[in-house]
Amino acid sequence: MDPERRRQDILQAAIAVFARKGYYTAKVSDVAHEAGIAHGTVYLYFKSKEDLLLAIFTEKMGEMIDYIQEQVATVIGAESQLKRLIQVQIELIETYPELTELILVELRQSGKFLRSEAIDQIQRYLGIIQSILEEGIAEKVFSDSLDVEVVSTILYAGIEGLATRWILEGTPYALGQAADTVTRTFLDGIRSARLS
Amino acid sequence: MDPERRRQDILQAAIAVFARKGYYTAKVSDVAHEAGIAHGTVYLYFKSKEDLLLAIFTEKMGEMIDYIQEQVATVIGAESQLKRLIQVQIELIETYPELTELILVELRQSGKFLRSEAIDQIQRYLGIIQSILEEGIAEKVFSDSLDVEVVSTILYAGIEGLATRWILEGTPYALGQAADTVTRTFLDGIRSARLS
DNA sequence: CGATAATAACTGACCCGTCAGTCATTATTA
DNA sequence: TAATAATGACTGACGGGTCAGTTATTATCG
Image (tube, rainbow over all chains, first blue to last red; front, side):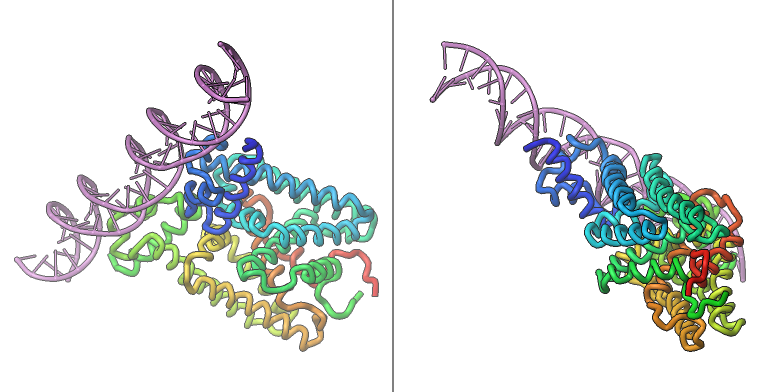
């Protein structure tokens, strides 16, 4: 078996198991079982349980964010980019719910302890949102009184929260449709009449 | 020592320790040490480590949400109520950062395993937001095309996310001011010009 | 090519530190 | 001094990590 292939299998198994049982509750032997190997083998590819979690965050999250950045770059104009960002993000959640769940649930915990690139990845993602907002302000399509730090945070958290609920409640509704609501809410707010 | 007082001391110590080290990493003896007692004593008041966590969620979260509900009821009109909700929520986060952090970080993990009232408390909180939104739609101050489920979720998550960031980055900016930005963003969106 | 040697991949029994929970003993209180 | 509360030494389960041994794969040679 190709070593890289095996490594990926283990990583994939770990994503599934950690998402299902939680990092602390999951045993390394559970991961091994899921991957169809003996648990000793895991240690030929990763030096510890923690290292395994770390690899998921840095490698897989990195790929996700690369893809988002790429997709955002295919459209022009801040408003379109924001729409695309929200849409792509929600598509990714639908496509990789386990990975998303891991990031949402475990990264928080671990974020306090793991000195790692994982935090940087989140920063990178927030950076993308902030760039879009700043470009929008420059284009005068977004209000210049808008606090970029706060808005990017609540936008990110809002999508995250929607995803969390969607996952925890067992994928109950069409997430894709929700993307639309999110976009509209952030662009125009929830007021019925435009007052000014 | 009054038994109820001791119980509360232990609960308070547990909040601090669990928030600082995380539930799984924290030892019962850490909690006992923080409370200034021997670790055996903890078991005179709580039947297990898990029971301790559960008590925090149900009792403390319950108090928090009662307070929010109470505060929202002091004003009239959906818009004012929404503003008050956001403001009160943010005040609570500033006042009880450890408890908030616990709820934000640990409840997610544990939510999957713990069969408990903790989940019901979150539901209750979302219910408050939804009532306000529905009232607003009835009053015609909020758009009637608004998806109450989605908006309440992203509103809740947005505040949560802001709090998380604020806590994890070591309370860097004035959270109170952020309340304003959140309110404005949700009411009016981020667009500069009112288009319709 | 078949046999044998060398290497690499894998296995799972075992080791050992950790820590939740217990309980015999001691201190406190009424 | 009887009842109640608190203590902390102790126990046993648990699971991460190791490594001697096994199996599969590839290279070498007659």
